[in-house]
Amino acid sequence: MEINDALISRLEKLARLKLGAPDRKAFSHDLNLMLEMIEKLEEADLTDVKPLIYPGDLTALPRKDVRIDPLKQELALKNGPDTSFPFFQVPKVIQNKS
Image (cartoon, rainbow, N blue to C red; front, side):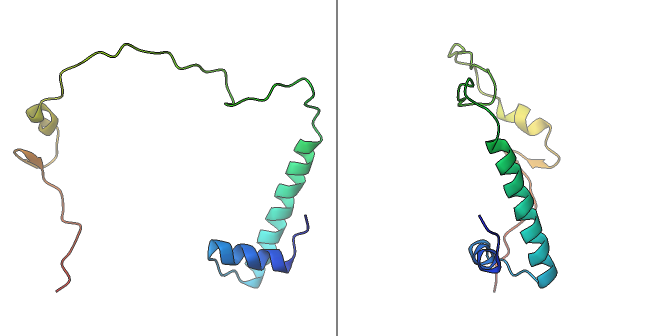
């Protein structure tokens, strides 16, 4: 794949970016480095390697579905910085535009 101005312009449009000349040059250089790394990975001999769904041999151990009592409201509010029973007090984040 060739990294040229047309490709950089297309990627700018897709990512909704506006790059200046120095940034376009750096972006082009970075893309070329990534493509070189991918080409090196393609050289690896993977004939005896099984494909993996996950990068590790982790298995999820099933656990029993046990009903537990929910956290009491008083206990949940106890550690809050500012409470007014039965709620947490938080700063207003939505302002009315009048």
